[in-house]
Image 1 (cartoon, rainbow, N blue to C red):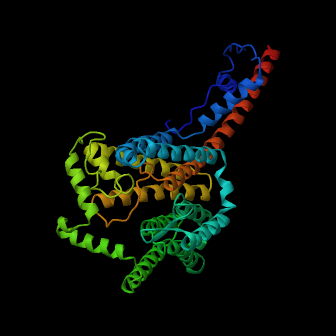
Image 2 (image 1 turned 120 degrees about the vertical axis):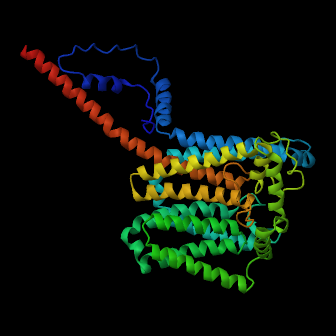
Length: 440
C-alpha cells in the first residue's frame, strides 16, 4: 500500500464506487456542485494535484533531509571564512542556497520531461562531455597543479561526466541485451568508452571522479547481465594498467603520497595522512551526541576543506555518532528506494538509469565516508547533497530529477489502465441497471 500513489479525489473515484456496488443496491445519485466561475482557475490546481500525485514522496523526503542537513553544515563550516573574506557570515551560505535553487529548477524540469527522450540524445551528450573534458585540459583554470574547471572555476566537466556516463551506459547497455556477454560486442566497447572518459578525467588529474566513473559503470555493466568472467577480466586489466601507470610515474605526486601515508597509517595512526588524523580527532571530540551545531573546532584551520571533502568529519564532531548515523541511514534509504524504482521501471533503459543513478550517489557517499573513517586513502570526493559545491550539487539534483522521472512515468502508466477500467466498468454498470429497470 505504501507504494501506491496518492491521487486526489475526482469524479472517477465516485464512479469506481458505483461500478463496484452490487446490482441490487440502491445507489444515490452523485451530488453535483455548482460549476466554478472560471475554468482557467481550476486547471492549474488540477494539474498541480496530478503532478504531485505522480511524485515519489519517499525519495523526495530522503533527498530533502540530506539537503537540509547540508544547509546547516555548510553554514556551520563557512560562516567564519565568509566573514573573514566578505565581511558577512552569510555570503558563502547564500551561494550554496543559489546553487540549490538552480539545481531545484533543473530537477523539476527533468521530472516533467519523460526520461525516455534522453535515450535518443545519449551519444550526443557523451560527445559533448568528451569535448568539454578535452577543453578543460587545454583551456581550464590551473589550480594547485590541476585543470578541472572552466568559466573561472564555476563549472567542472568531470562532475557532468559522472551524470552523462550513467545516461549513456543505461542507453547502450539497455539496447545490447544478450550481446553484453560477448567480448567483441560487450566487454571491449565497454572498456573503450569508460577508458576514454575516465582517462581524460585522470589527466586533469581528478582521481576521485575517475574512480566514481569506473565504479558506477562497472556495477551497471554487471547489473545489465555481464558475465562474471568479464567482470573479473576487466578488474584484472584495470589493476594491471594502474600498476604500470604507477610504475612509470604517471600518477600525480599527491596520489603516491596519499597511498603511502594510508599504508603507514594502517599500523600507526600517527603516520596516517594529515586529513585522516584531523578527521579522527573530530570524531573523538564529538562522541555520541556531539559538541553542538556550530561549536566544532576542527573546522577552524585543522580539517582541510571542511565545507566539502571533510564535511562528514564536522558532522561527527558537532552532531556526534548519532548525527552521523542519521546521515548514513538517509543514504541507505536512498539506495533502497532507488533500487525499488529501478525494479519497477517499465523498460530496460529506465531500470538501468535508475540503478545507475542510485549507484552513482551511494558510491560518492561511501567514498567520502570511507576516507573520513580511514578506510581508504584520501580521494577528494564530496558528500552528495551535503557538501558545498555548485557543479556537484546541481548535477546531483539533475540526477535526482531523472530518477524521479522514471518513478513518475511508471506511476502514470499504472494509473492510466485503472482509470480506463473504472470508466468502462461504470458505463457497463449503468447499462445493466437500465436493463434491469426495463425488465421490471
